[in-house]
Image (tube, rainbow, N blue to C red):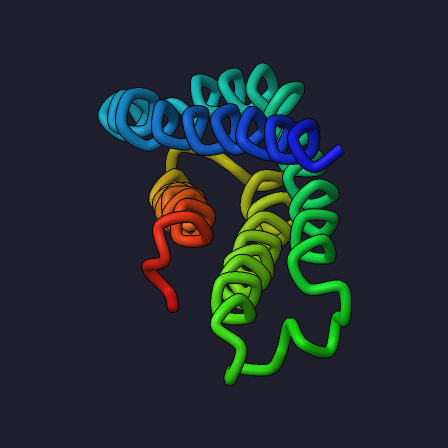
Amino acid sequence: MYGIALFLHILAATIWTGGHIVLSVVILPKVLKSRSAEQLLEFESVYEKIGMPALIIQVITGLWLAFNLLPDVEQWFDLSNPLAHGILGKLSLLGLTLCFALDARFRVIPSLRSETLVDMAWHIVPVTLFSIMFVAVGVSFRAGWLY
């Protein structure tokens, strides 16, 4: 079961992170140059169909993997335990991602137009950086970077 959960977690991370890198590096510059909110909304509508399920899979498998590492959830918050560093790092990045995503979904996207594209960019770039940091923290469990 561990191998399946880890595989699904990594596959979902690939979809989530890769999609956000493409969005930030390829789509966003074109959208900002052409001032086309429609192009951004078009990408979002297509990507959301695989990106959101990927994020949900990451959250479910991530919690399962964390529980597998440290079955006592209280230990997730014990900074004297090196494994808690990675778990707290992932939970912190998840919290930041959710805050940015909810703000974008309920405040920015409903009124998205050419004049508000920069506001959306200020959401896309940090979420992309958070997604890359998710991967780095995940690798650290094996590489020992956070211990």
